[in-house]
Image 1: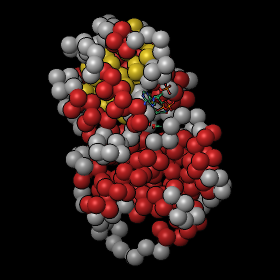
Image 2 (image 1 turned 90 degrees about the horizontal axis):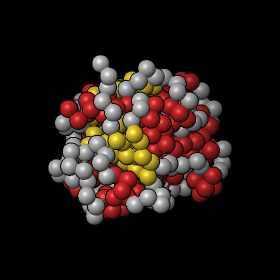
Image 3 (image 1 turned 90 degrees about the vertical axis):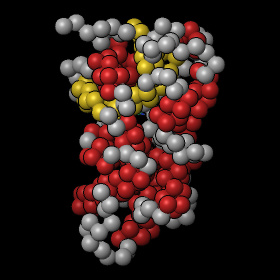
Image 4 (image 1 turned 30 degrees about the horizontal axis):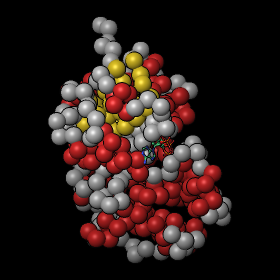
Length: 313
Ligand SMILES: NC(=O)C1=CN([C@@H]2O[C@H](COP(=O)(O)OP(=O)(O)OC[C@H]3O[C@@H](n4cnc5c(N)ncnc54)[C@H](OP(=O)(O)O)[C@@H]3O)[C@@H](O)[C@H]2O)C=CC1
Ligand SMILES: O=C(CO)COP(=O)(O)O
């Protein structure tokens, strides 16, 4: 059966927006790529679009939503958010911001272990499209699915989104671990303890705990924490080499969302008394309060406990 072809507009022409545009074009959809620097007005870029994808970084989400509220969205268009971040003012996720602004539109989260450079090379990968309206997620699944990009549907948008967002904090820690050459045992311990930390916060925020064991949680944690292609990993790795955060960010290709997410996550965790020991050490490191070595020592010196004593699943 031939798949339906759609007009797909990608908003945000950064590295991820470009990679998503490549994927949709490979499936013969009519793709328009728009950024705030485009000559084409936003209203014209989204006119007649069935699928509108936001691939801007977190700091661009609110300005983009506000701009879109001033133009006419095609009636049955589906909004897809691919941003992995948290709003510093409200702690809302991008999908919550999109859904609140556009109550009559379906919002779909696209999230998974998707390092853009590998996707652009056509290497095999898988992702999750998640929505409260499963039919909309299935439409987006059809738009992107190909023999090199396997797309799973899910009905837990918040879980899919938080997996991709919270793992960025852990990727900074993983970069530190590798940068200090702490070895494979240390890395395994770090990642294994990172997952329940993500689940603890994710379930507090309303996500389904099971989702974190899937591609958008554990899958993205593995990919991002083990790849020098990850900007968040690079932040941690280079901090361990003695570079300052400012120096690292000034040379980084694209956005490392984990830097802002760490602040939002730790502030939320402190307020709600959630245990986030790894994120807390990343926070102190990013704020120059400790060295990478001191962060490791602080994690190793924590009070001894049962392995699953604080895992509220
Ligand atoms: N790269 C990857 O491998 C993946 C990235 N992601 C997520 O996708 C998001 C974007 O990442 P990535 O493309 O890598 O980042 P980039 O830094 O390459 O691109 C950021 C994009 O956001 C836009 N933007 C930033 N601020 C604003 C603003 N105030 N108003 C409008 N647009 C704005 C930029 O526009 P402009 O070009 O005009 O500056 C640019 O298009 C992040 O949340 C990231 O976590 C998710 C999966 C994979
Ligand atoms: O989210 C990503 C891969 O799934 C991209 O990670 P970085 O933003 O750390 O590069």
